[in-house]
Structures are given as structure tokens and as C-alpha cells.
Image 1 (cartoon, helix red, strand yellow):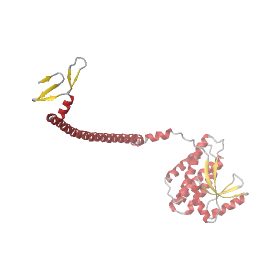
Image 2 (cartoon, one colour):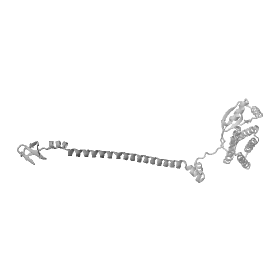
Image 3 (cartoon, rainbow, N blue to C red):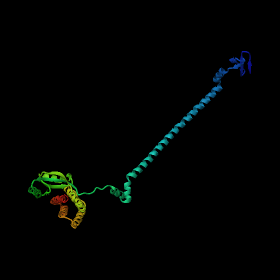
Length: 318
């Protein structure tokens, strides 16, 4: 029950009267109850509000504890998913990379197995082939240069009697004495060592033999095969001087026999060409004798014949 007088408002709560502060409205002198102080005071002190507030805070704490567990589990799951995705991507990338590498680097091997190296043959066939010429580039051991042919021949006999090889080039003056022939200086090292051991002075020079212009096309084709045989025998002699085995010597002998027979049946063949083919045949015989008997003098005979064959070739094309 609320009792109101002119200046005082009293509130009865549970049989007890309590004074409440009030204020007046300026317009119609209506009393307005200001219960803020009372409400705040009793809200803090009243046990119902205190218990209610405690229960809410307890519930809030429990809720926070429960909710704090879930993000950790979720983060672990997310991390695992990221690692699995990354490893899967790496595996796929590596596999794809190996496949591409095998595709490009192993293409030739696959084609070789499937087509009998047809791809390699086609590739070689597509390359530009340098035209074979009669020009011959070799290295020579020069034993001296002489003003007269007599002096040159005397020096030649000196080397031959000593068990070596020697020829005199009469196409140029002064007359040069050659005592060794090879495709390059390194191939001549065994011969140089043999001469130096016997006290002979040696001088190595490179020489290129340039063919003349008036040689016919048919003659060029015939002499090109002779040049190839000359170089092949030079390589065989070099290997034997280096105490290396030679392979396919029988095949080389057969090619020489066929080429010599074809050359001798030509109508326009000259004596120099026949002598050249015959000297190559003598070279082949000396090489075979050395292979069969393993006697050093046969190897120097082969060197003598190959020197003579070189001079004949030089006279033919120059």
C-alpha cells in the first residue's frame, strides 16, 4: 500500500514503511518516484539477485571452458588436412615430373627398341653431309732437306739400313727426306721415340696435299676410295706401333682387293694409279706378316710401304 501526502511518499514493503526520495514535476506538481537508489541498493543486497548472478556467472564460466576445447581440436584437424594436401600435391607433382622426363629423355630409347633405331638413322640422314674431297692432311717426320738428289738418297739408305723407313720427295726442292707418316703428331710419337733413342734428330711438320683442278669426276670417285684405304692403313700401323690390337683387318684387305681389281679394269687408268694400288697391297701384306709373326721388321716394312704410297698419291692428285 502506498500512502501519499503533500511532501512525503512512503512505500510499505512487507509491513515496513520506507521513505523514498522524490522530486516534483515543474508543470503540474505531479510527484515522480525516483527509485534508482533504492533499486541499486536492494539489487546488490538482496539474496535472490546475488544467487541469480552467481549462477549466471558459473554457467558462463563453464560455457567458456567447454567452448575453449573445441577450437584446439579443430585447429589440429585443419593442420593435418593441410599436411595431407601438401604431401599429396608433392607426390603428384613428382610423379608427373618423372613421367615428363622419361617422355623427353627416353624417347630415343623407346623408338630404338620399337623400331630398331630407325629414329637415330633418320636423324643422322637428315644432317648435312660434308662432301668428301681428295685433299689430304697428314703429319710427317722429316729427316732432312738436301740440295741434291744424291745426298738425299744417301741419307735415305742410311735410315733403311738401320732398320727404319725413309723416302725422298722429288717433287719439291730442296729434296726432303721423310722417315715417318701419321694422321697427326701424336700418332708419330712411337716413331719419334725410336729415332731419338738411336740418336737421330727429328722434325715433325704438318702437310696438306691439295688436288689439281682438272681431275675428272670419275677419277675423283676412284681416288677418294684409295685415299680412304691409305688413311685406314695409316691408322692400323699407328695402333701396332702403340702395341694395340687392330680390328676388322680382313675386311680392310677385302675392300683393297675389290678396289684394286675395279681400278685395273678401267680404261683410263694410268700407271701411277696402278702403282699406288700395288703399294697399298704391299702395305697390307706387311701388316698381316707382323700380325702373324710379331716381328718388328715387318712393322717397319709396313711403314716403308705406306710412305711410298703417300708419295704416289701426292704425285697423282698434284
